[in-house]
Length: 204
Length: 204
Image (cartoon, each protein chain N blue to C red):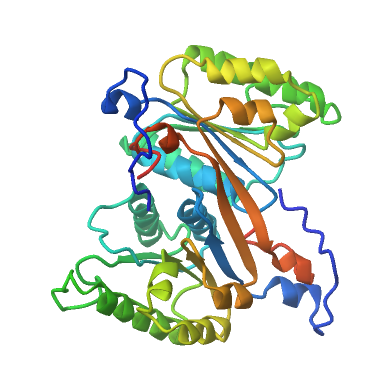
């Protein structure tokens, strides 16, 4: 449980309420499990608050759906049908982003990642979503597919009240620097070390 | 993304398929964020597979609902209405467990935690659920409200195919020892250090 007790009172001239409303830039990194899962868990919570949610999966091949996509899109449908919760959009790389009319060249992951980031930038400028999840986005940053300083500037200077979660291993130090909340998921013990493979319901 | 490549092939006489079907005992521990959120994220995924989900929140006062409870119970209702996904039960301490007819003595958390564990034991013996989330259960273990060896024996020798996730800080070494997957969420950076308080949609 969050204790909600700040360790220090910042000298930023903001009231508690103003500070409470400050949008967060969050990073889930580390070699352990739960980085994306915790991000999608946040999305569930945000949906319940009626937030507009945009998920962008920067994975090389994401033809398959994960359970969270099915469920979050189902929740988005519930919102359309009954007004419950908030709207949900889920986009992923792999064979062209869903907003693109281009067929998508699956072999050019770098271009596809750059296209995804350009769209995220447009949406951040337009304040389209309340919560943006940039899943596995540390890798395009690591591999030079997107410009790190452009990402850092865009995310840290985003207008309005937009929450952002970036997931993936080896988060860039500059991203960590500008983020409000960085959690490292560390593997203490993993069944795959014993030779057990991924299984339905747990891994996807 | 899980790579799904075991580092070793175990000498346990099981086929890959048999090993894949082995139910996991998982622990989310550490001082960072995301322990419970990742567990509820797993529940979302499990729901999508049609699993029967039981959540047991061992928190001292849980009169308030968190967003995940609303959403998971909503998904449970969807299951009842349309057969989508799986059934969901969500129980929490705080003023008597929901299955109990007793009014509940909110001041005796130790007795309430013990009662909760006794019920979980019965359900594990009866194989009631496919996924059990014992949220914040490390604390009753730490505080001696439940017997550690009883917990370790019950969880490690559970019958059938029951997945279990235990969350909370300072997981007992004996629990770690018998678990298949232990993840430590470590706080790298947290906005509360800067004096920012918890906020709706993120903390609850």
